[in-house]
Amino acid sequence: MTRLFLASIAVVSTLAVISYAVKAQEPTPEKGVLPKSNQVYVKIILPTDPSTRDKDLPIVESWIAELLKKRGQSKFAAAAAWAPLADKGEESTEVWFGTPAGKPLGCPVSGRIVERADGRIKVRLDGWRPGPTPVTVSLTDEPGSRAIAAVEELKTEQGMPYVAVLIGPPAEEPAARTKK
Image 1 (cartoon, helix red, strand yellow):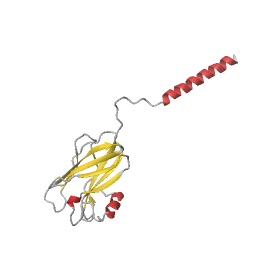
Image 2: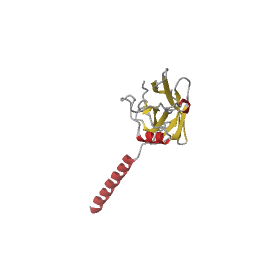
Image 3: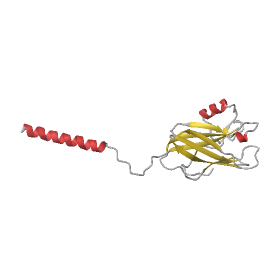
Image 4: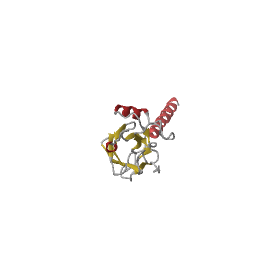
């Protein structure tokens, strides 16, 4: 009787361990399902005196301010909030449409991811009228990576515009295109 009792306890224990192990396993990914890509955000920074800028504009993050000051740009303001870019292969995303001080024409800027390979990502922004002025930024494709790039062709007495790029974690839903 004792042997039967111990045998039944052993069987129940074994079943409990097996069912626990089965529940703990991760599901097998479906074939053809690609991993989610990290989200890419861009922000346009203009050479503007912060005291004369529109008070409703977004702030310039400290890491951007530090990098700009190292490059000799002491007066600057964000033109708009962070704009999420569409993933590679999709259309360009409108990042900003504005008129910098002293410019007669509007300056639409759009951006897109042009390459994503080997743990690196390349982002290209085009616009800044009167002619197309491309700016390309390349950085590590991992959340937290960030960089700035100058729009050197548009340098004035006040300085030049900059593009800030920030890599975030994959978005739960694809980034929605918004009009600025």
